[in-house]
Length: 219
Image (spheres, rainbow, N blue to C red):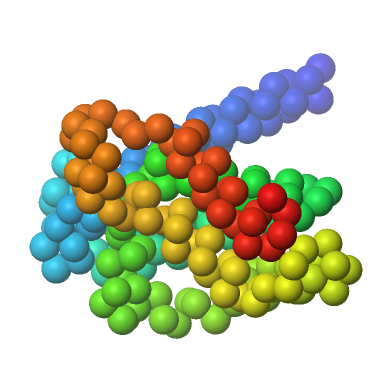
């Protein structure tokens, strides 16, 4: 019986600990989303922790329980975005053929930009400004880029695709897919689409996929 009571007590502790961890996860996600909105709209200099706290539904002291400074939060957000893009490549590379992998990668990059346009713009602004916060992190992400280079090179060596520069091919995909998030205002203007309307992303995706498949002789 004492053993049963101990199990009940332990189960209760596990449940309580799980609730605490889940609450922390929700708060950190709210802080991350609020920070992306604030940094994307005002930049690092114009952003304030008070505004980030308000966006996240927290008081400023509550926010600073989870972060040490605005600058550290900004840097953490940029690294988080890089991790998201790294995961997109990893999940896309599980395809069986070059066409499947290219299609999946382009789809997921466009989808990410559609769902997270402010994150994409924030990253672009940091790079445009010389990557003062990201520069010390970029080297560790070159490994995944080189994995993609090696994969594309293997396709060329096996004559599965037309010869292309593997690194440039990959960077061109980044440039095109991120364009639709970073330059949304310009795109909607030229397409004569209202500010609150969405453009046909399925059509965009098919055009982008066709562009890159043709570049490597697959379509």
